Length: 447
Image (cartoon, rainbow, N blue to C red):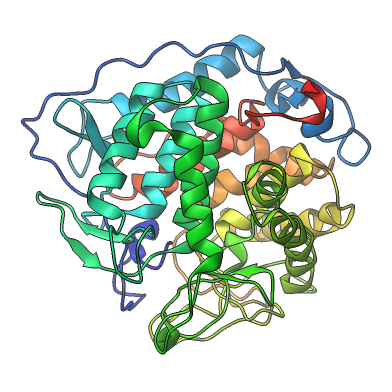
């Protein structure tokens, strides 16, 4: 959940009821050990020319496109170095001050957290993102540290919230909850990362029985009983994920939470509710087509179940296109790369990238927040937005998409106060375009 300015350049613009949290550790704590070297991937990355709409998805072919190589931007060796250097900086750098480089903060020898540097807090969003990145990098030690912290300090042990994760923690020990409410995107990423972990490394003991833990989370996501004040985080009627479970804040969704590729895998791998997850994948594809602005291709922060922008009392840009919405193009690119199930995705990418390319030509940069019709709201841009736009070449062969991928390649890994959100989106984008954001588990290519 990104409901705060930590992914922005100004705390003054957005007034939120909730802010997402990460714990800060004293600087005197020991630094992390070096990660294990990345092992071979389930299928070799493959350069495929002009395949945006014709090649089968990687789930079926086992082939993952290295778009940086395919587009003539870099050599395989340069790409591998960029992936590893980006990961090392964000997760293993010793520089953890506000002006520094790392987002991971150790807690003793066997735990740690991802910190939102700008807001000085800890979030389920960042913890689950960190776990997904760690499993993609074949770094089980890092994965287990993040998971143990999440289980210990974030996951509710009893009450209506049992098995959900408090989305917002204080940044210092004892890491108390700043909010008891969950953020559904965190649960979705926790579950998917746990499935990948067991499929890649096997089941451990206790909390490291990864697949079991994933299924517990999924059951909680869809099967809790509604109360006067709370609703489960996944609507069976709408087959859509919610933005929040608290009725007082409204019942609606967030376009950036619609990760159809994850739903496709859950439909095949979850212990229960497989048809629900299968339906959700198609519903999400339809939803993202309907929710895109017909001219700009932009998505709002939050939206009703029919895709109409959702205005709220606690977020000034809830009905505009901003920080949450950065992620939508990356999610569509992932779905196309893995499943290639919806030819409309190229239209969505062309429309959005066409808007941003035109703005870049006119203004010399892109801006972080817009009205849905494209009018500029913020005075600043975002490297996280630039990174996500760089994934568009996975969907479309347009020259404009290639230019955004080239900018992603040239973009330095974010540092300083805003490196949490921008940095993690940058890492995800580099992984995607390097062909290193992969499915770990049974696929048609392995059966």
